[in-house]
Image (cartoon, rainbow, N blue to C red; front, side, top):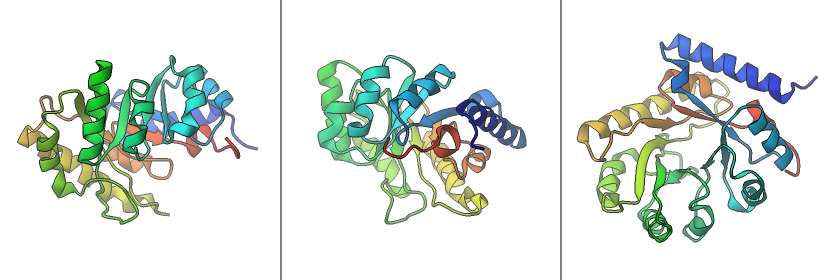
Length: 232
C-alpha cells in the first residue's frame, strides 16, 4: 500500500535527521524543498497544510495556476532552467531562483528586478560533474562570473546549486556534492560577494542523504516526498 503524504513527510524527516546525525550537523541547518512539478494543485495545498513551507517548480507554464492559487503561502523556489524571456513571469513571485548560469540571464534578472524595485535571491548553478546534458557554469568559471555580475546590485547570490548524475549507488554522487561545498569555501576565501555564500542546494530523492553529509543546506525532494501524479 502506498504511503500517505504525511507518512512520506515523517519518513523523509527521519532520514534527514539520521544523515545530520551521521555527519555531526544540526538538523535545523537543512531545509527540505518540496518539488511539486509533478503533482496537482490539490496536492500542493496539502503539502503546505502539512507544514512544508518550501515549494519548488521548474517551469512557469506548469507552475502558474499553482502560484496564482497558493503563491501567498510558503516560500517559492524556481529550480528549472530559466530562459531570459521567462524572467518577467517569475520575477517577484519566486523568492529564490536556483539556476543562474549565464550573464545574459543575470542582466535580465537585474533589469526586471530594478524595474520592480526588488532584490532577487539566486543560486549559481554549477556543473560539477561536467556532464554535457546538464546546465550550469564550469566550476573554474565561477570566480570570474561573480566578478562580472558584481555591479548588478539587485542580484543577491545566496548559494550554489548542482545536480549529480543519477546513480544506482548514491555513494557515487559524493564527489559531486563535496566538490560544490569545496568550491563555495574557495569562493568565500576570495571574498567575491558582499556577504559570504552560505547555501548549498544539492541532493534529490535518490541521493539527498549523501548531499546532507557533504553540507547541503537545501535538498530538493519530489517523488520521495510528494509523489508523482500522471497528468499533473
